[in-house]
Image 1: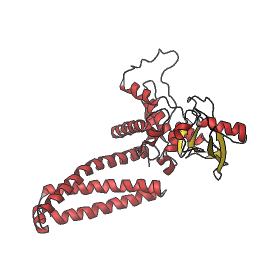
Image 2: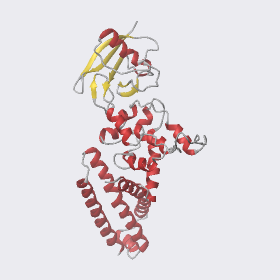
Image 3: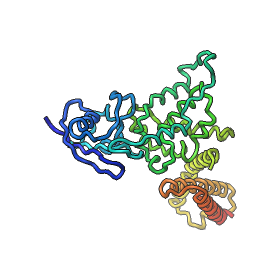
Length: 237
Length: 112
């Protein structure tokens, strides 16, 4: 049986990589590797996971320099020779080892008005949304975000401008801007405009490149730029 | 700066970029044709002096540069130097005015 030479980040922001030797298996995921280290080699290793099937968005880490969801990333896809380097996500404070503090990431969802604002009550009938309408298709294209923060960790603008809301929060805002049932459009457009919002995006498309769900936050952000510009020209911003 | 003001600056930068795309292409083509055609400085000035069309074209070019370049520098100052706020905005406004003044002086020199 061959072995993997795995370096794993240990400690907080001023920590360092520590080496481990992990047995190599067929169809082994990066999360399997981390779990093997914690269960068999070093029980003090801190990391997050929950569903293991790419739904919960909790296991994202930096693998050989790139942010990835580790439960659905096969070692064979990312290993360099027999080496893996696994660290915490970038652009987020490190709590310990592979665990980051994601509160700032989700606070930005709230700042981007990422909450649905209902316009009807339980006494009203179901809203009728035409499945083929442009707004519904735009919302559909962006709705499957699992909040893993891979896009946020990959984004250069987040690194340069700490106030920047980031691709995930803006992508969420875009789904609501296209939701015919939502009543918070005006406030949301104001919240996502400007230096910390959609206009800070440089369209590098790293978020779209790295999104494990193959979403395109860049396209969502472009949509927000268009809608905020039109709102500003109409005097609605 | 308010979201409305930031959005308007973004629109101004995109609109000025669209103008520059045309102006730069026309300018480069004009320079290439003038040089390959063997025109002297005096020949060129003979064509531009008193020309409202060239004055309007290069005046628009200067205006677009004066809008676009300072806004780009403002972003660079923010992202690379961490310099944001009223001080950075004032510096960029000064650069805009300087580019506009110098550019319009140059346009006046070759068209009036």
